[in-house]
Amino acid sequence: MAFNTFVAYTTILSAEVNENFVNLRDRDIRNEDLTSQVGTTVITTVNPYISSSLCVYVDGVRQRKGTNYTESSTDTFTFIAGYIPTAGADIVVDYLRSDL
Image 1 (cartoon, one colour):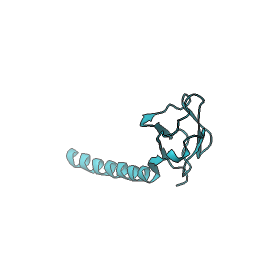
Image 2 (tube, rainbow, N blue to C red):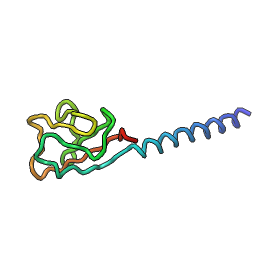
Image 3 (cartoon, rainbow, N blue to C red):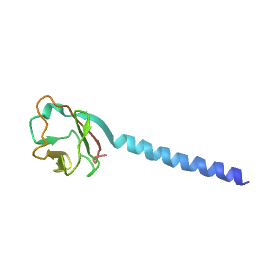
Image 4 (tube, rainbow, N blue to C red):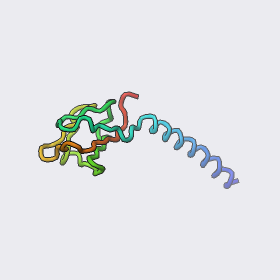
C-alpha cells in the first residue's frame, strides 16, 4: 500500500512541477539581442520584465546589477558610467516577462 501511495503522490507532484515549468517557459525570454542599441546608456527591452529577473550579457559576459547596470523601469535598464558597451559590443538579455 505504501508503494502505491508514493507513486500517486509522485505523479501529482510531477504534474504540478511540469505545469510550473510550462508557465515559466511562457514568461521566459532568452537571448533577446539588443546590440543595435550599443552606444546609448539606456537600453529598452522588447517586452516589460519582472523586476530583478533581468540578466544582461555584454560580449557573453554576465553583467552585475548595481555594478554594471541598474534597472530603470520595467522595460529599460541603464549602464553605469565606466561600463557602457563600446561600438561592436554584443548585448543580450534574458528576463521573465511581466505582461503575461
